[in-house]
Image (cartoon, rainbow, N blue to C red; front, side):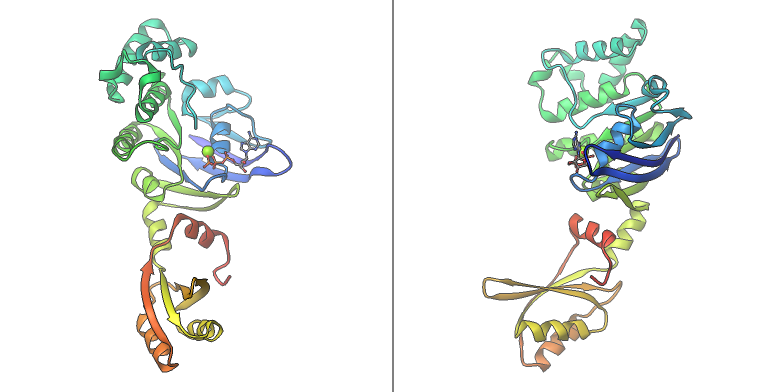
Length: 311
Ligand SMILES: Nc1ncnc2c1ncn2[C@@H]1O[C@H](COP(=O)(O)OP(=O)(O)OP(=O)(O)O)[C@@H](O)[C@H]1O
Ligand SMILES: [Mg+2]
């Protein structure tokens, strides 16, 4: 359905994305996961034909997004990062207006506006001014306008950002439902979110795709090896070299916090070294003040995927 080859985009001297390649099959729900500035929005703008890439090519259902951008836009529904909503319009009149802008026949507009109000659960807000809607409901209006013209592909740029937890849950389930019938590409910086919604995840970091997998495999790859945080009373240089000797330890970082010496120990997959650590500490006559498992933050995950394991 979508084929992107060698996508590169420069805003200034530095590339925002560089040599990005991926494909999306019809009916697939694909997630772009990446931290701020990774290049998610840039990629989505290019996919939807809103901005040409500096280099590279994207086709959508066989249409070139640059050369046949009108054909592409007819087939794509796009929820941009910031939705250009006309806040002095009511929900219904805004949606009708968007239908007209897209050149939909007027009898279709009427029917589709009712449909999308229903799908996005906006029934109670059809006559509300957009200015008076909460962020979550505005986001739903954004999704409603994206699906209005029954596009084959839905591109959603951080659809749940800035909305409260209850509305996040509802918005995610709405997107999941849409994904049953449509091809969906969405971006997020939240790993559990893409895991919940997407069949496949591309991790983008500093403009490059650094990993691609199913959410299940990714979680296994990333969580298989855990981290320990231990506080040890003893000379840091010696403690560091002792910890690094322990089998199953992949790397150790040391921080001094106030008068505490804290070590973050990254473990090899499946290793459990807690016993070895306590024995080593006691044997050297140091004191083991605390030890706890810590999950990986998204930052750790990106670091893990983008840096050499030994560093
Ligand atoms: N209009 C612009 N002009 C100049 N630089 C830009 C512009 N838009 C984005 N960039 C730069 O391009 C890089 C990628 O930005 P992009 O917005 O695509 O990332 P993102 O993954 O969507 O980030 P976020 O999670 O913050 O939305 C960043 O370094 C950003 O500063
Ligand atoms: Mg963005």
